[in-house]
Image (cartoon, rainbow, N blue to C red; front, side, top):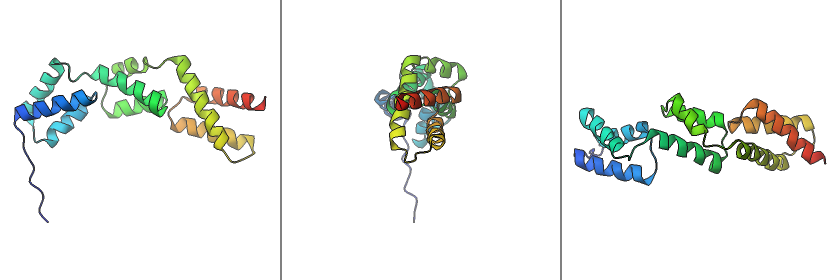
Length: 163
């Protein structure tokens, strides 16, 4: 079986494609670099296109990090640890990660964890309180919330359930 021929793009075609790609959704530099490589753009052309996208504000790493953190928290209910790990995997700087996490309101964050654990508690099929607490904590930890906050909130959820 033959490999399909890879279509190569001119610098101008690639720039236009990447402008549309960045307008559709905020992107990080790593995603843009990968996309350019998949289009057959390498070396100086690749770097020049990235510089041009940054100059025209199509590509903005801080904007990407902030919208990523907001979106993953609001829509997927991820905690700060998970968001941080995902941003690091996209080679976002620690400074920009800190800026991105500022997008998450502390009161809203705590309430989201509480609501998440409250819903999960209703689905746990055991009468053993110790097991319930362990399952809740494990669930919240996998979502990327911080340990101390998890245990504090697990206690609050259990107190509310008892009354």
